[in-house]
Structure formats: structure tokens, C-alpha cells
Image 1 (cartoon, one colour):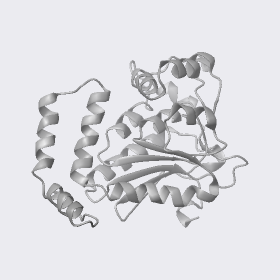
Image 2 (spheres, helix red, strand yellow):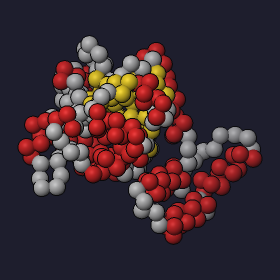
Image 3 (tube, one colour):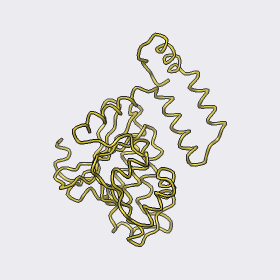
Image 4 (tube, one colour):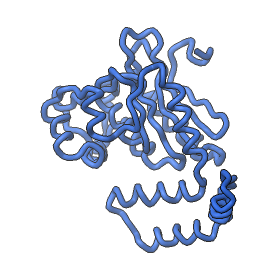
Length: 262
């Protein structure tokens, strides 16, 4: 483990070779998120969005020393005292994560609870560790969840599983989650690093411009904000790009394409 994680701290950002990694870093507190952590996450998101060379964002957690790995125990309940008339400090974070420019991957290397489940749902892709659990205890605490979080739950889980999550507050096992089709794979620790690296490299091998523009369109369609004119403009943009020419040439020459993002 890097010296960056020797002491508990707000989430840690590392950037290398086109990949940004954000690691939750309060393992002794089961990586519970405090308001200062939310501010740090928003700052990290801005850095990642401004870094044109970053094409993949990995969201994971430091689970060192935990009896059972916990990715995040959720948002610190005390933070709700800072709730404004319409929003908690927390809900802005998954909303921002959902629209980040790079492809986002949640490397869910432990159990996840409460609002932190929405961070997982806000990512584009997910890998999970076998043996984890997932629980949404909002109603057990007397809380109605926020609108964008409910929307993400329904769009990813479907209505029936969302109702189970919120109206029973019972945990989901990793096998339950696997049946929902949310995750690329559920892995053992032996396979964890190699499979995460393989998924990351697959994403990096895609044409950057086409991937970025397609992500925008998919998000808009999912949110029922589709503008056919805008989507068609993106289609034309990529069809005239140097990357598309390279992709076709590489296909005919039976080699891997070398994309430039233009």
C-alpha cells in the first residue's frame, strides 16, 4: 500500500497513463463519507474533467485492516443537519459523478451501504468483489431518499428491486446483484487486479472522441432528455473524424488502431 494511504484522509486522487483513480481512505471508519470528503470528491471531479489525457476514472476504496471489506458505510448521518430546503450536501456528488467526461468504473471492493450505493450506480461500469453485500437503509432511518438517487435506482435496478431495496431495507447479496445485471463481473481477490486492469485497457483502446460523445448521448437518452438533432450532430462529427478513418484503415489492415482523439 502506498504511503498516501498510511493515515486516514479524505479521498485520494492519483493520475497515471490516462487513468485517474479515486480511493476512499478512512478504512477504520468503514470509509464513511464526511462533508469534508464530499468537498474533496467534487474537487477531484473537476481536476479529472480538466485533465484531457484522463479517459478512465476508477472509484475504489482502501479496505486495509477491516475484518470484512467495506467500500463505504455511507454518508455520515450528522451531515443531514446541514441539509438545505431542497438538497443534502451528499446528493450533488453522485449527480456530478454521473456526468463526468471520462468513462467511470466503480471497483467495488467491499460492501456498500446507504447513499454510497448511489456512487456505485452513478458510475458507467462496475466490477464487484464476491462476498460483499449492498443495503439501502433510508426508510429504516426515517428518511425519504432524494429524487435523482431514486431515478438512478429505478433505471439501474428496475422498479421491483428498487422497491425491495427501499421498502424492506433488507440487504442484497452479491449473488442478488449479479442477477440484476449491474456488474461486469463479480470476482475473487485472486482475479481482482488482473480483471480490473483488463477492463481498463479495453476502455483505453476505444476511440476517445466517439466514446466521449456516445457517453453523453446515452446519459441524455437515459434521462429522457434526448435531442435527435444533437445526437445526429455527434454522429456526423465522429464520422468525419481522423479516428474513424484510422479505425476503418486498421480494420482493413488487420491491426490495432492508433487513435488520437480527433
